[in-house]
Length: 175
Image (cartoon, rainbow, N blue to C red; front, side, top):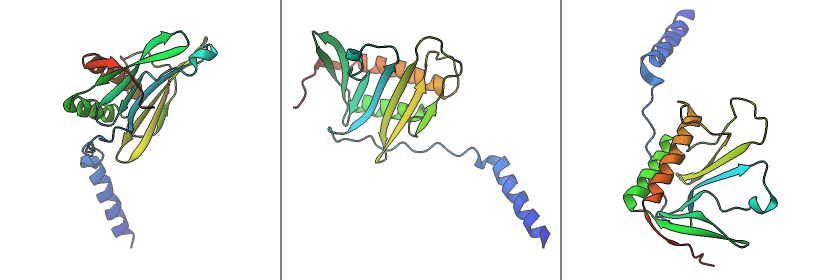
């Protein structure tokens, strides 16, 4: 009776070795179109800040359909924001890049070393396939890392460049 069990185990090992561990990448779903849906948000939290900085506008908020809101400085006590409008192709491209950066899963990426002075926490939230995923990472500085931390740093740089080249106007909230 042990022979069929060994044959089954050997077949399972052979399947793993021959390629089942290299599953094709998951298909990226269509990005949400509802303009009231926050599709992607990047927020940077610094540990040593004044109380006025704890409620800053996120680094990037992309709403369904490709509307982007980014901070535009202060006007006295009032935070200003700028609105960018992405083309449908650019919106889909950013959404696909977020998936390729590994943001369509819940994860925490700890700092590889200790930090002596203050730390930085980056929180990225992605809405995909009807679910919301949150990635948190501490002290993201180098894009030289080939792992998930480096992919997030490179994604943030690419995201900034793609947004900067889109049309812009002052942000006016609906309410």
